[in-house]
Image (cartoon, rainbow, N blue to C red; front, side, top):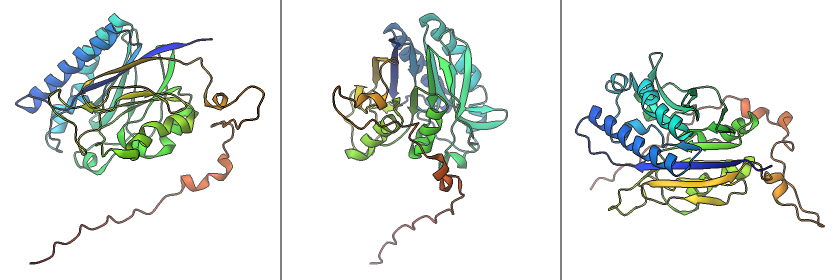
Length: 303
């Protein structure tokens, strides 16, 4: 039975013209609202923004972040719930927010009726986030919205294949990956985009930020490439390097990857990403690892 789902990966611009941090956050919300309304008008059933969209263009410190994001979650729900309700479109809004007096990198989920559906706290935080007080999460929730079971991993989470696997085991059919990865081109980033899909037999939706229309992308800038990727790692939609919306309709009722490689009348290997697992052999995954010392920077030669 067909289960169509129209997905929008909303790639906002990576620049902000606000003169103060508060002004920049207001601009970020306005930009996101406009883009989400466009996605809804184009028929999206579910739309996702990039990681911590409210903080684009804002320098983050332990001093300025908490007061700036004190009301961010409430503001997100206030602004985006009416858009979700009007367009019958679920929304994933990744933000930095103060929740229960803790700074969090969190994705807020609003369902297609405009109701709060839950939130996901980023599990794998990087050093600069810890420096301004971000507290990591420790769960892999799956949300049932817009007729689909969805999971979310944020930025560095995708460096660990266990993240997408946990979400898949918890029932996710589509995994969204809002992130702030810089793009160095070549195969490395292409593999990061596709690997979770083919390893887990799910649809993977990376969402980043794009260049302004008059700027040419260069290696080292934010990756862009917001896209929708099928379970066989086929890129179904890719917005490229500039701001815009990658949008396509997938069929969640279509065969998962375990069935895709079968040809009538012939023997073909059928990878079953879940049932072929051997959890009894995976004990090393749960062991504590010794923290590696960082590689020291090369010393400059004296002239």
